[in-house]
Every structure is written in structure tokens, then in C-alpha cells.
Image (cartoon, rainbow, N blue to C red; front, side):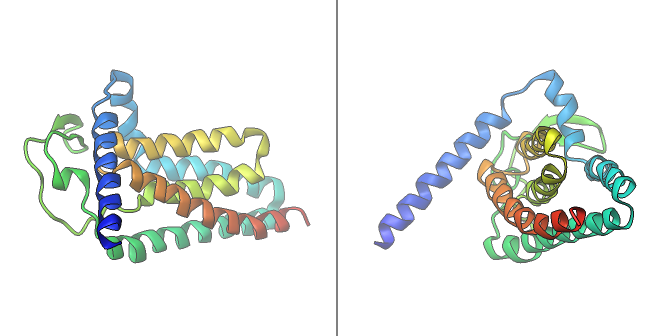
Length: 198
């Protein structure tokens, strides 16, 4: 039974690795330009703060409370991913384990491909906090603005994909992050919607 369990984990791990390299090596000039921005926390904050400001403008104090509740849901998501799950799994990032990974150097503002693994670090990979946090916020915002829900999901997908494109997360890290973020968002949107519908 243990051997079967280990074999399944090995198969999934290899699938994750192969899918990572396939996606990480699918390059395009437009994506090379766009993807580094999609992972910037400043851009992510600005995107959701813009819609948070609209909520406050439309609903006044109830909108402010709704925005704060959304922020608390994202903080809970981030804490769970970063302080509980990542230290528990301790999965190393792709560029820490493998060579031939496309990564972006923000200091030099250019792409390069790694010639050797960076080695072990405490910056763990599973799950992706970016994917989790953005999915949590997108889940709540999509419920508040159902007519443009596609915009929030598209933004969340772009952020999540950027993590693979930048070489810092495996696809399964992103999928797991999506799952965690959606759970927190689904719970968080209940009091938010109730507050805005009063």
C-alpha cells in the first residue's frame, strides 16, 4: 500500500515537473513583457484597490466595511498559505531544484535561463500565495460585480500563470493556491454580500 502511494506521488511529481517545463519554455515576446508585471504586488494591490474604492463610493460605510472584510479574507488566506502550508510541505521552488529554467531578473529587467539549480532555500513553493490571495479577492469581487466577474477571473489566471512563466512555481502549486483562495473567498463573500444587500 505504501509503495503504491509513493508511486502515485512520483507520477504526479513528474507530471508537475514536465508540465512546468512545457509552460515555462513556451515563450512569446508579448508574454515576456507582460508576465513580470502580473506578479508585481503593487499592480495587484492597485487593481483590487480600484474596485475597493468603487465599493466604498457606492455603499459608503457599508462599502468600507465590505472592503475591510475582503482584506481580512485575503490576509487569512495569505497567513494560511505562507505561515502554515508552505512550512508544512517545504517544497523547493523549480529554480532551486532544476537548471534550464527561464527566470526574470527584476533588478536588471531582463530574462535569463538558469545554468544550474540555485539550491535549497526557505522560500517554499507549495502553495502559491500569489494565486491563493488573488483568487480569494477575485471570488469576492466577482460576487459583488457579477456583470464583470470574467475580468476578476481573467486577472487571477494571468497572475497565477505568471508564477509559472517566471519560473518560481509549479502548476500544482498554482492549482492548490487557487483551491485555497477559492475556499477562503467563498466563505468571505457571505458576510460581504449580506452587508451590501442590507
